[in-house]
Image (cartoon, rainbow, N blue to C red; front, side):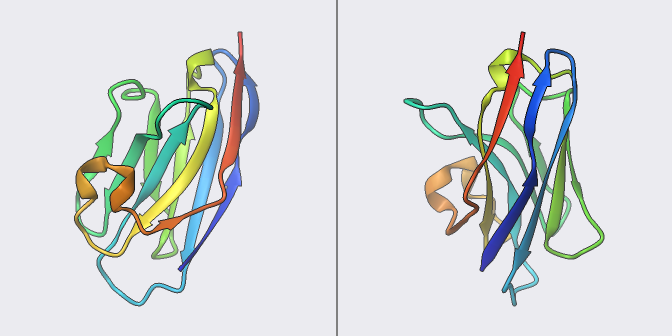
Length: 123
């Protein structure tokens, strides 16, 4: 399984950015797919996850500002990030799990990771 990430970059406070992730090499119809983020020196934390069913989860810190949606392709999602804050600055990683259980949102349950994409929000 390979994860191709795109988007990200820099924005000012209150601005918007979009991240996209496309997974290839999947053969299972069940999956969990979404985004984590990490600041240097801190633990990787969940941002938003969705599974092949109806499960959708957001970190409390992004609820109401970020929207995770499924793209037309089966194993592809986009994260629309609005009302960005400086504290959203981090390396964002697409993650995928070959199960519809999203691993209690813990990074160690996810077998597949993208290379990471930087998001920087300036004050």
